[in-house]
Image 1 (cartoon, one colour):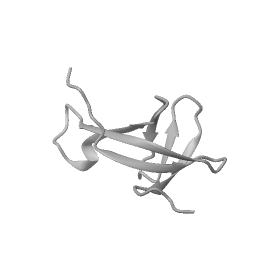
Image 2: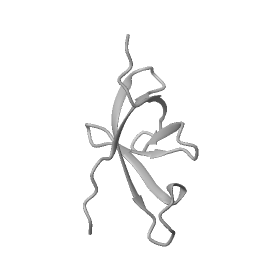
Image 3: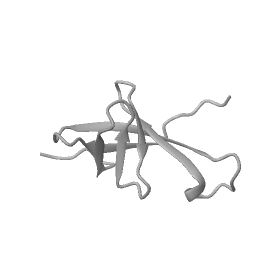
Image 4: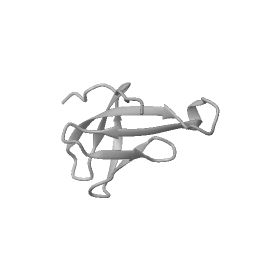
Amino acid sequence: MKHCYADDMLWVRSPAGDLRQLFVYQQPRPSLPARDEARIRWARDDEGHWYSFSRFDEALIESVSGDWFAVVGRQAPTA
């Protein structure tokens, strides 16, 4: 089994308004050609919670709580 390393970081906002930084992982699907839309993508936070992307990557769902998180961007938000 190959090891996966985070290849991107993403900031998301919870329904309560708090921000979280996620580490994004991706790998090609074994049965499909290596295209962007054929990649498996997921994310993980510092606490070890896993997140799945929505179909159009505008939100993520936390696997533990089932809460949706809106994508804020790749840069840390400023106050």
